[in-house]
Image: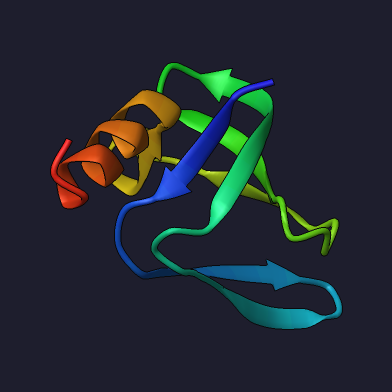
Length: 79
């Protein structure tokens, strides 16, 4: 299972028959990839257990990989 981390805040807007809603992605939140649609789009699920899945395009611009996130955190603590 692949995990990714939000790079910067952004809001996804969804339209459904029941009405429109927004979902706010917050930097540092962890998501697991549940389905890969293409090279740069996937369905992700927040690991906080809310159970909601979200389609995301521009994955490389919106998320860090585990390896990128680890490198950033190690630099922050001076390692």
